[in-house]
Amino acid sequence: MHSKRSLLIRSLVASAALLAFGAGTAHADLLKDIREAKKIRIALDTGSPPYGFVDDAMKPVGSDVETAHLLAQDLGVAIEIVQTTSPNRIPFLQTGKADIVVASLSVTPEREKVIDFSVPYAQILAVVAGPKGASIKSFEDLKGKRVATTRGSNNDKVVTTGAKDAQIVRYDDDATLVTAAVSGQADIIATSPAIVSTVLAKSPQKDLEQKFVMQTVPLGIGLRKNEPELKAWINDWVAKNTANGKLAVIYKKYHGGQ
Image 1 (cartoon, one colour):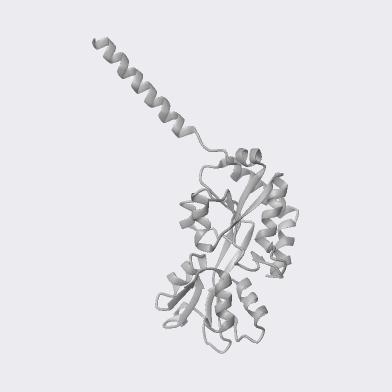
Image 2: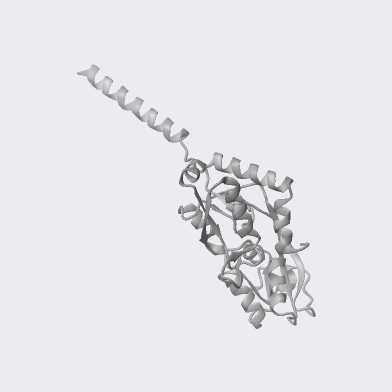
């Protein structure tokens, strides 16, 4: 009786150990899945010009859009664009709605806790812009002022942390922020130089200029944790297209000399 019980216990322990080993070593291989499906789902924010926007022909364009198309082409698969906004970029990854995110996603320590990033493929400045006559040189000068930004963006985080005594007004995406700035609803904005340029392009007479740089951060392609094959392929792709100048050409096309 005791021998049977001992045998059963040893069997259960061995099974548990085998399952634990399997759980610890197994991981998904999204790169393989993408190649087998012949399609990659890329989350893009088409409300964030010039990174992503819709042209007169209702076609998604922009530096991130063109970067995503190049990536899919080099991977040898079709691209499925998954429309996203700043607050949804990371949730779309975590819930499996997108395979990767190419949507002006800045690399921050907080985000690195929940998702992985490729090596940087570009950089972005976080700036404060306001009326030309306004004396705004630092966060301290925003005390008591109404500052507009895009909800869930790195700009939101940086200005909220830096300008603790400002009144922060949040818009759901960059396109709405641009509309607010053009219409006069937002005089001071915490955003990127590209968005400032977009506001001035839509309203050349607008009394707006860049006041100070809050932060300079790298942009990375976002992907889920524990995808070493996909991450390695993307890192290699970024390195090659940085070396051959293709990513720089795309960036300059939409951002000029920034």
